[in-house]
Image 1 (cartoon, one colour):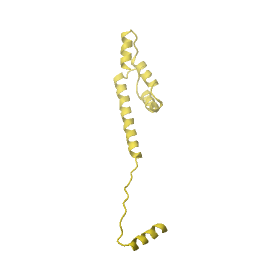
Image 2 (cartoon, helix red, strand yellow):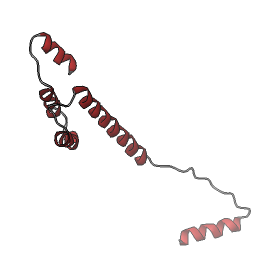
Image 3 (cartoon, helix red, strand yellow):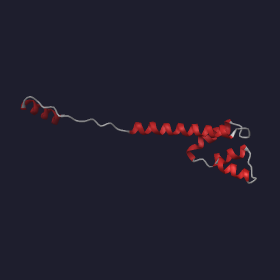
Image 4 (cartoon, helix red, strand yellow):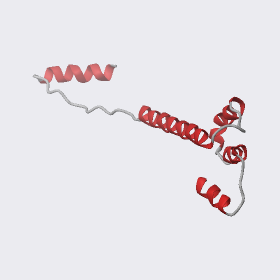
Length: 103
């Protein structure tokens, strides 16, 4: 974005900080709507430095990625390895079989 803006300045077209911030806010995806609303209501867009604005967006993006990573980790399931115990006599095995079938 800054490369495009700098190229436009070289060609004689310049924008105010408020116009630049508004252009960026307009093209953000829908999941950014709460952040866009917060910025529009809490900050004076005419005096907001572009660097501070971009830093705020990058911080929010990092936070969103961290939340996604936590959710992915929570979704992972744990599998336990089953082991079979050997009983000392066939009688214990029969009792265990009957008990498990009874349950």
